[in-house]
Image 1: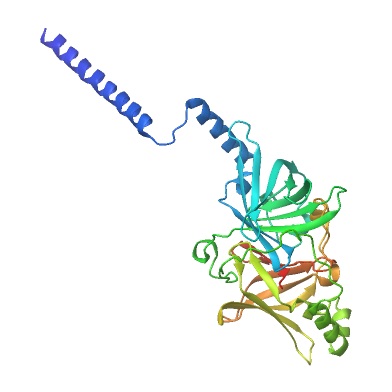
Image 2: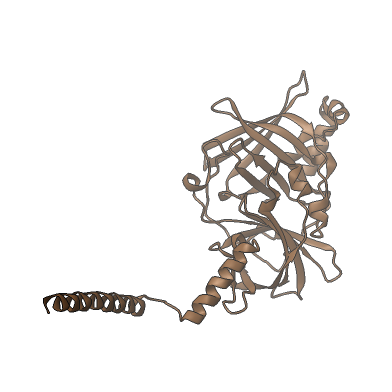
Length: 369
């Protein structure tokens, strides 16, 4: 009898413990805020897994994007883009908000994958092509009909490049997407090009979003002056390099790692050897925070495959170069840079950095008013 009593007592204790555990789990489930039903939870997990597996999460999972392109009356357009997904169908959708008061909205929908070769990016130092994914989507601005935007996002630089096209499929305007809330300490290595954030100014008169094509430009006059007077122009031409003073212009700078910053490009040429050097200067008001120098300029032929796959223009061979990057303060080489633009009026410039630690950065330059 004593044995049976002990067995029954142990059994009661075990059952009590099990019931208590079940009760605690039930209470935790009820008290958890925002908890969805099992069906909703399965759908959400399925969409999350699907987006990650198909490579979309780098695009959708971010809080929001700063989308910049040239063409607004007061300078480059800077809009805020946010993408999300339908928890039932996993379809991606989103919007861009901007304008004088932030009251204009563009709608993005019907996102689909697009085969985009990474040939052009590989020529600029890309090592892992699986970080690049092509896509296209429908884009509707409040003042225009639906257009098709094509591009790619690069999880390595955490940036997006898209080309908006007209109804006939021709190139209309290019957009560069960067992160507006990235901090230097968390997203940059100490060897990367230092940039600092400045308050964003929303572009005005967004209805004039198409690329401006004036007959003459300050940087064009600057280039003409150096082409006529600079004794090194002929030697540069023999080396396959265009006159570098084209890059010395008032640009609006946007970094894939630190968003918009106050930058300046300064071009120099050795009067004896005709060797080219270029400085990228970043400053907060009048205080320089980091200066890097480009040397050992070489011409570079960038394949156009990546750009033509998204209906974009191809880099101008006469304005494409590669160079070594040196920290002007430490006097050490910290990486390489590729510079290029497109053979179009008011075309943006690109500086594509590759650093020894594997980090990459894109600095997007648009004409500033």
